[in-house]
Length: 201
Picture (cartoon, rainbow, N blue to C red):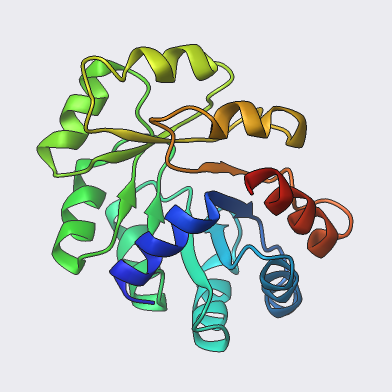
């Protein structure tokens, strides 16, 4: 998926599911369930041995789904993810090596930034949307709102501790671009995604 397509999709859907694929054969059913539920986006975490293969399979099988890589900690993982077809990269913190690789590949990078210094470092790389993780630990909505003054050009992707019950409260904050999490990944994923998308609407 092209960068412009991905950016428009995130702006429309405003949800980035965090997906853990433990068995490669779960990739297609999981992404199908997300897509059928109205959320054609998947941040497949690099926490499992099959993550790279799952990204490759997902990107090839579902060209209309934005398949990205999460929990990317270093340059090696970033290169592997992009080579596998990831159309976006997410990290729990900010890696300058990963930022450079993503800039060179023209792939959106969402680094975890929870302090003014980290946000300023992200801006040095041209990054204007950052992840807030774990959001519930680092001040939640209050912290994100407080950054709107000094950083009016920055949008946030909060992840961590958010539930269906608190989702709308986050989505109503002007400097929140989208919300990440795994709260739609339990039980009937399709039904859960539809419920989440009703809240978004």
